[in-house]
Image 1 (tube, helix red, strand yellow):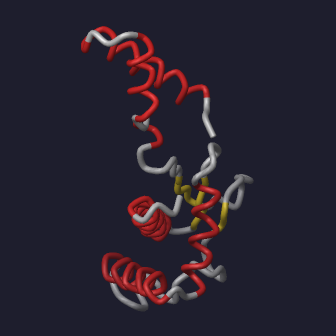
Image 2 (tube, one colour):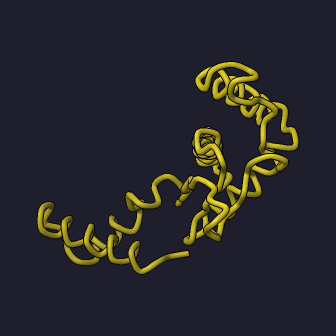
Length: 149
């Protein structure tokens, strides 16, 4: 799958190779086609986190309570903001490690995030969305290491 931006970036890299390395057009094209552009070096993962606003309809995946990715931890009841985010992070990565329900939901969302359109996560508390985004980035890097993308 190629996009116009990637194709343009490849052509730009080929021009740089021709100018600075003195390569022929064919050699520069061959070299540029083996390099991944900066936008897709990470597997093309695009995840944005937005705060839920009941007055504005936004496209995206709601990840708050009572959804699969919603943790059972609440600010104030289960500790300070930092403590609750830490507990949620430990819970989420534990789910990934044991391949629980949250892991399966994250792998589903990874497929969406890898498309050109990307993924928008919507949450009342964006800190939880940021933990999910970082977890998805980690899972994506692991997939890239093992050739799963």
